[in-house]
Image (tube, rainbow over all chains, first blue to last red; front, side, top):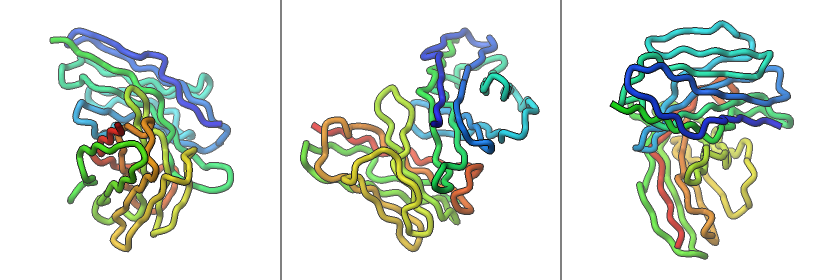
Amino acid sequence: AQKVTQAQTEISVVEKEDVTLDCVYETRDTTYYLFWYKQPPSGELVFLIRRNSFDEQNEISGRYSWNFQKSTSSFNFTITASQVVDSAVYFCALSGMNYGGATNKLIFGTGTLLAVQP
Amino acid sequence: ETGVTQSPTHLIKTRGQQVTLRCSSQSGHNTVSWYQQALGQGPQFIFQYYREEENGRGNFPPRFSGLQFPNYSSELNVNALELDDSALYLCASSLGGTRAYNEQFFGPGTRLTVL
C-alpha cells in the first residue's frame, strides 16, 4: 500500500527562522516520485518540487532545500529564513506505478500548517 | 498560458440532490484528475481521465462519476449527495498521459457544502 505521513500538524515560527517539514512515505513501487505542494488560504495547490526514487541528491533552490533519504523513507523540506508569505499548508505527496495499471494519481499526507509570525 | 479553472467556486446543496462540477484543463494538457479534500485533510484521489477514458479510480462509490470532453475539459458528477460529501473538490491537469512523474497543475477548487 502507498501511504504518506506528515506527523507535524502545525508549526509556528517567527520570521527569519529556519523550519523543516517532515515527510515519511511507504510504497512497494521500485520507481516512484515524491512531491511537495503548498496550499495558501486561497485553496489552490501550488507545486514546489519533485524528486524521483533514483535521485537522492539533495538540492537547494533559493530559500528551499530538500533532504531525500531512501534508507529511512523520508523526504523532508526546509525553508530557510522564513517569511510571512510562507504561511500555508504544506503537503507531501507520492506517485508511482500502481499494480494493475499506470496512473499518476497523487497520494497526499494530511499536511502541515505553517504559521510564520512577523 | 491559461491555468486550470473550475466552476462554480462555491455551491450549497441539500442531501439527496445531484451536483455537477466543471474543470477546464491547462492549455495542451490531456489528462485530468479529480480530488476530494475534506476540511483539515489532504486531497483524496477520486478518478482520472485520459483522452476521454477513465484511467484509474480511488476508493469512491459509483455515485461519483465523470466525463472528459474532446477539448479535455472535464465534469465531476455526484448523485444522491450525502453530508460527508461536503469538501473542496480539486481538479488537476497534466501533460503527456499518465506517467507517474508528470507534474499536476491544480485549479482553485469548488467548495461544496451539503446541508
